Image (cartoon, rainbow, N blue to C red; front, side, top):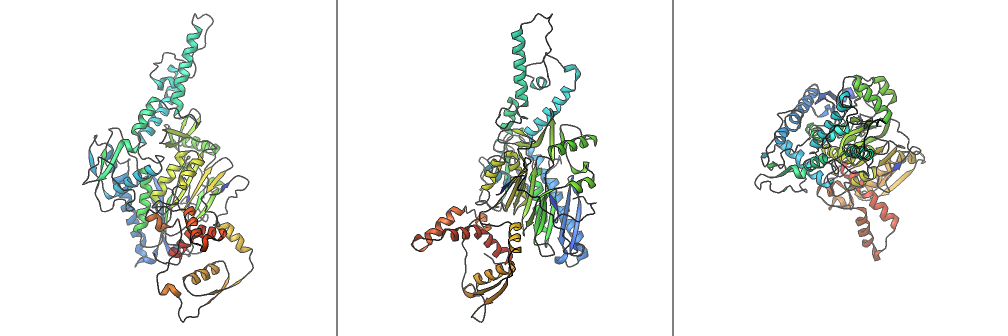
Length: 601
């Protein structure tokens, strides 16, 4: 959102970077105009730019003894975290801790700070769980592609090389710049078959050089250089980590450690001299988490498109974030031209909104969804449109598929944007990167499904977008209504009166749910005090896919829950529809009890 924009903001902010709907079914959402309260009196807002990325922090002033001091305190907290990012995690700072690790010798070890330890252990964990789709060590391979694109452009512009046939066969960079072998002159005495073989060799080498940039996903050829770089551009071949007392002969970090090694000293060892870590992407999510955790009250923290919230908006509703629709291919080419005119040179171009006029952006901007973020939830977005590499008239995303070592071509069928919602902005950031690196929408969806349960930070929601259609995939659980459908259904109902008998946990839950559906509720209780058995003994609720299960590493799914529910029925007989309803609504019910009703575990 431009700080100079004068119109009402869509939701509380924007992010840009399962149901499948196409161009016929998909209706872009109407953005809410949030004029419910005067935010200037209830929130202190801090904005700025750090590490070349804008940030916005909104924090409720209610927890500050002196509301006038709130702004200064929020600035202090944010500045402290940003300084830690720059000194520990940024590769742009030559003296940062991560750069010291990058330039260690083989078998050198380094005792990691708490900040680096947390980010590295999370990265290592997600490298394994995504099977390499997320890998912070792809920097050497990415630098190679940047060099190749720049070198090819330089050779193509060198008139002395045009039409040259005196290229060394081993110098594939030079061969890639050759567009044509010279045309044969009738007076030349040459062996036609030799010329044909030469042309075949040149075409073959050119195809190998272009293999890493190729647009055909089924063509997995890469050059020998790429294969060699791929071997060192992966976590397992570049680094290892372990507890200080046990050494680092083996990676001995336990993936079930939900605290990511807090309170323990870990060391990192360099395994290959040319290995490099680039934590800039995931470090952004880590910083957003740390700022949100340090603030004393309800807040909204956004940095470079990554967002985390705590509590609720001052009006009592959830914080809301609008998902910006990625630009079309035509718009990306227009932004590329504007970026060039603005002075950007080199193979890597940032297609930022700064190259667009505010008026044009405000009028033409479209959105894919408006998400309600609950207490503690975070959203991160990864896309193919922020940084690109232009080569041979095609656009390539500045994202590598670490599993095959290829750049992703920007087109209408491949995955253009991944939006991930979890309870950790750092995790959301990494998973969004992993999803976009897949390129293929179906493969990304299959990977995300594995993070829905059984992981300590489960995915709460996701959105995948491809331009053709457009094609949009949302995480959905069978049996649960989305918000627009629920609102439409309730709007068609006549007013109702609901009588609930019993004032225990189940009775109160039913009464509140009925009230949420706009019913008039009468609660009957024969005892002089409410609470029922819940006030006399411990109550429980069965469910699957809950936060508690994920935090304890319990892998559960609807298939197992429904099997056990059927078996528990008298005589092994149960009503299928009721069992299905119980199953699909159980996780949402547990979340409602914990976060809306404040019922503790």
